[in-house]
Length: 448
Ligand code: SUG
Image 1 (tube, rainbow, N blue to C red):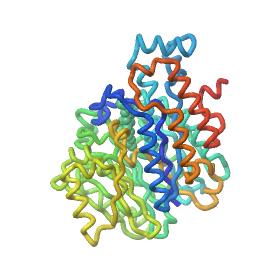
Image 2: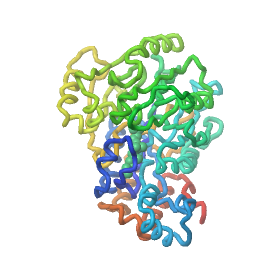
Image 3: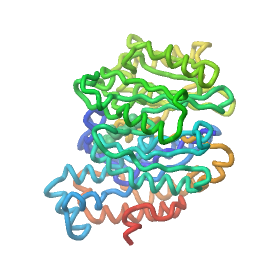
């Protein structure tokens, strides 16, 4: 069974313009954010998917502002003194140490189903996210949260993030898709990378960074003990990265045997497709299906603006595949027309589209697919996973009440330097770890 664990938006959600290469983050810099609305928008999506009959999980946010990170940068004294000094002397670092970016759990880690691994375990590798400082500080807590969600060593294997270096940039599941054969028992792993870091004459983007390296993708496949014949590596198109597709999930999404992608998503244009189909068929049997969108139908800029491909593809209990899309797709003419044609096409594998308002997250470049981390579990593994992290109507009610109790509806960069805000965040997170039965996962809890 596929479970989508959505990132709960943390109380410090703000717009700091931290992600060079992410068009939405860059263009919303310094706007006033609304953390409460952001968290409630995310929870509404989770509830809607649960009500569609899908397994829905919750992934806890991180402790922010990250005083420990500020300490490591040389700020000293009490928490209050550290915040004060950082606000005055290095507001950009305070903002980076306060980002709620862990909400985009597609970047938290990469996982594989137990059926796919030679040792029969579900593997998790936290992502180092080394390309952006505000994200590179996520993985220690991500690892602790993952272990609290999937604790049983009989079923689950956890790997620390790869060494943070220019060679092993890893952005997690945002650049990874698991295809599967028709009975769902054999998985095939499709990794997209932005650069071959150790190749000096490789093709790379001209403007924006290529965050994921082939070296990292291959290391993840090795650690997860995936047979080589069940893996396929393809380079992202530098043109797409330069247009704002900082992760491959901005221009492509896969599910089961379907790949939905923009024609400019991959470097080799169409060449990869025949090779991918052949490799999949050799390894798993059966055929992959594609929905390829041409640049003429949806120009790359419209795909990036609307986040059409940052939608989730889910199989509804009745067997139909549904696209979970951001409302921006209804507001972008080329995308709206395309989706109309798609649904009118009797041969399309995608039969339904549902729209969600996720504007608070979208303004930082995070659509429906960014907000979720997909995990495939058998019935026994599901039983072994932390049951409190699976959404139920009761837990939904508790989380909405928790958000309403603790979250502000307005946050600016100035608020981040205030000790009152830090204390508010810690009180909220302490309560959350009890709601989700996570134990102590945050630095302030481990220090106490
Ligand atoms: O890493 N934005 C995130 C968005 C991540 C989206 N994830 C996927 N595509 N899977 C990033 O660029 C912006 C934060 C700020 O500017 O305040 C940010 O981190």
